[in-house]
Image (tube, rainbow, N blue to C red; front, side, top):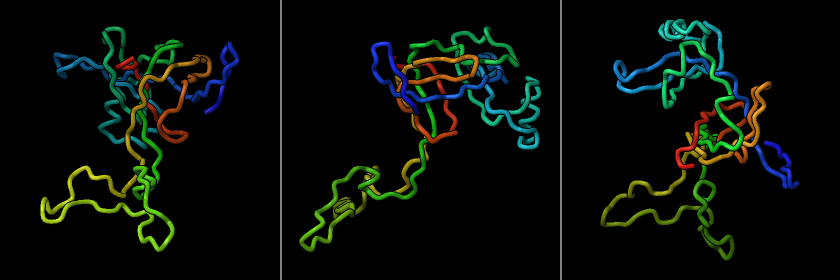
Length: 198
């Protein structure tokens, strides 16, 4: 992340995202697949890193091999051809986008860190500091209800941040500046699409 300055002098926090061209690997049609979609490949890798079935799939587009395959559903798939490169220019400055990524993994965490519990007092011989406390009833229902907030794995899950604004696009360097923070650590992969609820 970094900050840029607006015309009125306000400091705006932005995330710098590198958006290399994606390649159209497959066109899915309603007649053959039941729905219309375009499958994109992103993140070039060597051939020996790809399984044989996927190599045959990629060879149809004849544009190399890719780490990630994602589908998008444009208004019309007729605008896209096999092997076509989809660049950052499909977005415009000021567009509202939804960004999906894998959040930072933070390991096993207790209820205070994971869910924001208040915990108990630290003094006067209290034996209740950072524990979750009572988690269920006794005779009925004689179990812990599903969905109870308890310690466990924190982070390392898919999250979508909605309605982020594209602040700037620098096509010559395949870079996009997005106002606000996006999910995940540095060098992670993001799926950027037009906002559903903009």
